[in-house]
Amino acid sequence: EDGVVLDFVWENQRWRPGGGSRSPALLGGGTWTSATLVRRPPFEASRPDLEPLFRKFRGPPSLEDEFLPANAGLPPGPADWRWLGPWVLDSQSFGRDRTLADADADKPLTDGWLYAFDWPPHDRGYRAAQDPTSFVRCRRWVRPREAVHPSSAHSPLPAASPDPPHKDHIKLFE
Image (cartoon, rainbow, N blue to C red; front, side, top):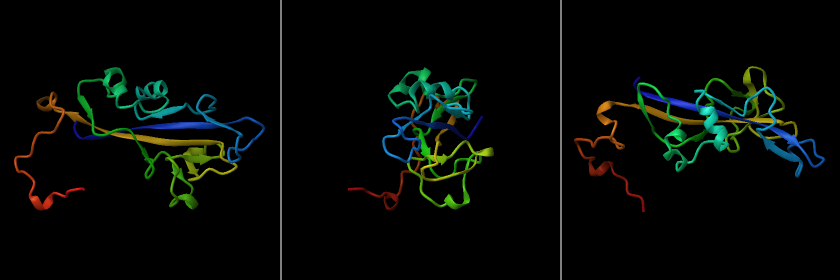
């Protein structure tokens, strides 16, 4: 395989009331948890081998944890792969698998979370912000990877360009 592949993992949570409150919008009334989900696993991934990894770390593993090959999350197989960056929250596209309600399409998200009363049919119609009727939420973690060709398999850095950059193309930050 060639090219860049985008892996993703959906993190799903349900509000668990406690302390007398029945609404997540009221203070001191409970906690968000992935332990008591109904009809949804805590993590849903583009590749099944990513789900146990996210369960183990309760989210994406840290870069330090990824030094162990078992925690790297790269797919096994005939091709060698490398990550092109860390796991980040997708707060823009969500792929085509989940969408915001039309009224919330242009609203900013808080930490990438999408909210709903219950899991919407066909995953359409989430809200951008938590309100008193928000009892489930989800967010999408994404990470690009690319195939490593045998000639560059042992080189962690890309090969140097034969032409150095022109001084007008370099921006210095002070």
